[in-house]
Image 1 (cartoon, one colour):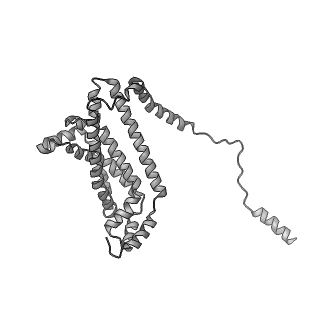
Image 2 (cartoon, one colour):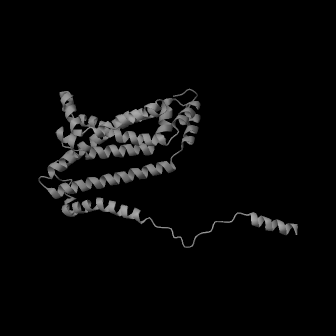
Length: 286
């Protein structure tokens, strides 16, 4: 009897599961799909119109047009130089601000937003006014200007990557295991910033391949300048070149996203890298 009474008391005290309302139906977020469809149409309709205007036959003849190879090569060279300079300047700067000067982060955000606020026309005219003749005669002047334009995008991509890391803890752990600042940067921080570095690279390359104002005022025929100049003689081929450049950019973005995703899933974590530093680096090494 006592056992039966205990079971009854336990059953009465047991928590009752909440009742599910059979009449309540989960509403489907139709408004999200409506926004996505409208945004897709907004971007897809101009592309479709450009494709119909250019025609399929215009795409194979783009690469054989006069001036295409020189303009495309110049744009790729500028993209490579700009990307290297941007990463070399911004990566140590952002890491140092996060690690040693966290109070200056707001000031850096304000400074890096200035190239977006200042019009490119004002920037290029001011630079051409004060630059020496040797620098004006070189296309490297455009690369230096593109570094300034890419600074807001690269800084925010790297800043977002560093915010996701416990940077101070990683650096202190690496130092306690005998790794110097160079080892910590190369083996600890940069592998964990792979996605942020790829994002900064993509944004910089896309900016260089699409910039027109500075290159035209500096009288250099980059790929966008060539497209606009060629539009005066053959509109369909110019539109086909624009669409081809856009498609190539999308493919590069997808490839970099795939590389970054595989690196994040299959790459070694910070713990494994710190263990590697502890095995390979003697105390006090750099």
